[in-house]
Length: 473
Ligand code: BYC
Image (tube, rainbow, N blue to C red):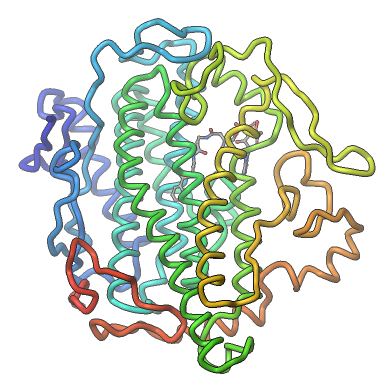
């Protein structure tokens, strides 16, 4: 078991105290991070005491220790999963070699780019969600929001550690830049599209944690296969935290659907807005939006960047070691959905060039399990509505579908026709207005929940649902 040194200014399990230069560099970055948190972290949260979990060691028992913490005093630290003895590279041209503990010179730029892109998403999501605490549906949900926020900020620490420890001066510069870019800022935006969208309300928050955090899971799983062992170990530990974020996503969406069904049954109507619930059409429009922008995050279907990352053993596939093939992919193909003049068709393309698409498909399979769960709730209540994922080509801005106009059920149409129907498929200004009216202010009485969401089936860490998860300051 590798335990965490909490006596250090920066809690860590990477022996920072033995590396004076690195420790100093990170301690110099720390005030800039805290300044960023003050400016861009959750609004008006500085005096709250929050029932949070904090890692004390990276093994199963140790990483989930619960207690009250004031948010700015959260002990953000650097935790890597334990080193696997004799780990061998599982894919690409270096397959079978021992994993690398240092960055090979020829892959420096490519690895740094992957780490910077991953790192950039973490503070971005905190920025996107910073105002949500002001309209929380309960103290339980507020606590979950803050848990996600502190952990995303810790993931920023994770990537910053790699940049500082392994990439010298340009790594330090890139780490500084991670605190300079801002989600949605036209002059210095975050790198990937979805991370510049505002998470405008709690329905969007649960969609984001369901869809976009799940992209995090799949990207981190691919990076956890990397030949660069410190990156792999960092990502493995991040994945333990990511799992809880997706739990928050699926349970949040489930509780919304549950509440809507209850209202529909109780009042024998589809028109649930009158009773302060979220109608299923609007739910579906939000789902269409978050699904499509998150599909974009996987990059183009055909990508030489992705091919190179795999061939050079930097970024693997989802569950690489469990796949039964040569793990080099120089001679295999993969079917990729494409628009061929009049219809969508699968085309066999070189497997190496289509790794983004393959990961996107693994992701969609995982998403579908969650959608089945939501439909199970509708069925249980006897509600005649089916929640569906939009067609893969719907509302895409990245990849081969970006130039097409496609409906959620896969009909290709003119731009004019698409625009005419857009309000049926994507959240409208009216939806947003309704959501704003539904969430005018925070609900902060322990055990009380907003009208549009059912209470969870159980509390955090076996505490009761009415536990005071946040002591407001
Ligand atoms: N928006 O060859 P392509 C998470 C760029 S989420 C804007 O297809 P590639 C989290 C691309 O950078 C997981 N630009 O790209 C979740 C490239 O630019 P350059 C984040 C985009 O490299 C919730 C160009 O277009 N982690 O952790 O194969 C809360 C050509 O594209 C977009 C990662 O993504 C876009 N959507 O694939 C908190 C893992 N997509 O370089 C956190 C690390 C593409 O030609 N990143 N572009 O100028 C990667 O593995 C890859 O960079 C990507 C893109 C999969 C993102």
